[in-house]
Image (cartoon, rainbow, N blue to C red):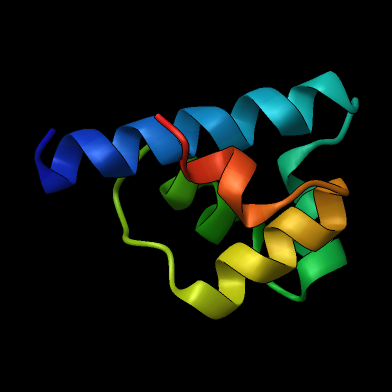
Length: 71
């Protein structure tokens, strides 16, 4: 799996968990102190996610970072 595929897989995992919880991109962004467009870029694999952001996203979703990166 190359870097692009990993970004896409991570973005898909975040989006799936966010949608399972009924959260909008805007709400998740607010919860982690980011912007809706940044969440969109993460979910679509357009940007790499830093460890700090990944930790905040996992905390906001009530899940472990590990559960997001096991692909």
